[in-house]
Image (cartoon, rainbow, N blue to C red; front, side, top):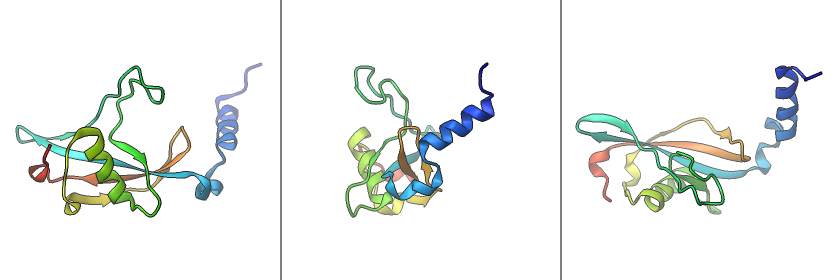
Length: 121
């Protein structure tokens, strides 16, 4: 007999460690970058190469681990620059959203970045 979806969810939640183990997760940041294209706001998404070992062919926003001592905002801007070549000033950070745990176990902090007129790249 197959377990119910609720039972599978509880087992998955228990396996992931739940919220009580947040402090042990690797900190990461994601740049939720809003750009303007032909006067229309658009969300910048990248496409990873299908040959990559991790997260191949996924369509994520620029994201990655935070370096020791690095803020979520600084990490998001660094990842945006490294993965897309887009550079924005620190004042382009519009805000920070609630942390969430990814399927791969990172504690992810979304950082909303805007003011595409200042972007270079």
